[in-house]
Length: 143
Ligand SMILES: CC(C)(COP(=O)(O)OP(=O)(O)OC[C@H]1O[C@@H](n2cnc3c(N)ncnc32)[C@H](O)[C@@H]1OP(=O)(O)O)[C@@H](O)C(=O)NCCC(=O)NCCS
Image 1 (cartoon, rainbow, N blue to C red):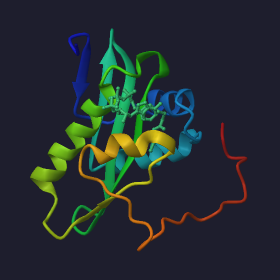
Image 2: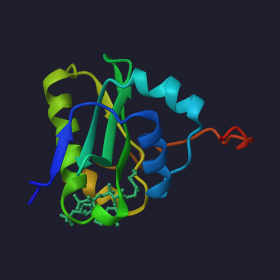
Image 3: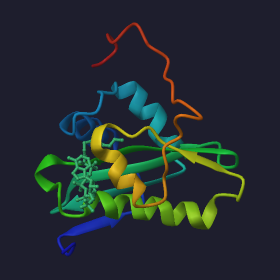
């Protein structure tokens, strides 16, 4: 099923990253933000189809105590083929092999994506803990 898709254990390049976020309905990131952030990836994967990046996922954090799964995305024309599961499975394999027993791995699940993460052992933090995000004022830095 996955024969046409190649999973590469590295984060996408800045342009592919920015394109894929917007194409999948995630918030846009400026070129500066992506160029600063991507090199700090602990472990990232990208999925290529005919040389084109059509999926990605990243693990970020301090590589000891706290980790966050981010940027899980599959191009809409390639969704529903198990690629999201393949990306998350690769990240979970890395987590299993590399994260200390006391490391805390979390994520913010958008919409129905919680059903994807639940298949890999992620459980809701609420009601004991509620995810919160800082509300930012300016969105003008996108170029
Ligand atoms: C979430 C996403 C990566 C799933 O990619 P995918 O390749 O379609 O996923 P898969 O085919 O591997 O399906 C895996 C699971 O995703 C879930 N799923 C199915 N449709 C979904 C949808 N529209 N949105 C989210 N999750 C969905 C199901 O639980 C499915 O498991 P199942 O087939 O056993 O029921 C993809 O829908 C996407 O890029 N969405 C937009 C960006 C986004 O919301 N990313 C998550 C941010 S937290």
